[in-house]
Image (tube, rainbow, N blue to C red; front, top):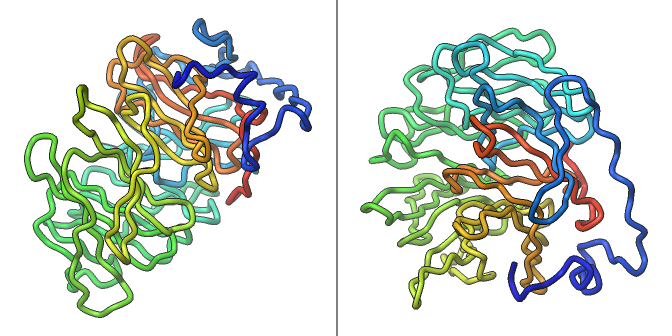
Length: 362
């Protein structure tokens, strides 16, 4: 925890984006349903109530943090699990704990799971086949073959794909937006649909972040950042690309940075307690991170305005970069994954007494 800040001290200085303790009475957490695999426990480091959502007997994995996979209004979460013998997509009812298998897949890429804005359809990659799945009747439609990665805007009206090392629109695969991409590259369409991010590996630990605009015909990719950088995510308002940069001082420090595509200007937002992964809340006033510190393997809230941190709970994952902490769309909860109790399982922490709710997309 940065500067040794306590919960009481933190609540006394919370900015407008957070709930002030002096004016807002803490809400009682909603009762958590016991059916299914839900298990409530008290975190030993912070005494915070944590809910384990899935059993660690089988492996459960969240989609990529930039994807749409949580519904706040309808209270469900999409994830991948190998409980049937191989990784397949599931829908978890966050009220009752009920699990619903959505499809039978041969080689699902768990990070690819992504809903459209209406939450009527789920997109996924099964081996190299891009599939659209109706959540209403579970009917499947094939959208493309030999695809290694994809990204869609929230409406699902625009999808970009990586095919044979080339970045292109699904609707116009013959027009190449960028080439020379590795098959492991995951593109990220800007939320406002005006362009797309992609990365290139330069050497072990060194990457380049690139951006190509959709607004100008024949636009060439521009370099946004390079070096020891990771965890790229678009800001919720589409204004900037957020990411982590390792900076060498006396020790390697993990800093949160942003870069503006229109100017390629990079700036530091905050130093972190060794974040290995992070995600913003609905208005980017608060960030949730997973620390790679061996002494303090924690899930942490970083308050942007005052650059202070609050420890939520331990994650104790064997690979901190894979903890994938994210906020719910309304910023009331934090979800993450960890293998510290067995195989990778999903967890939830209620943060609505600490973080002011934001407008949810569903």
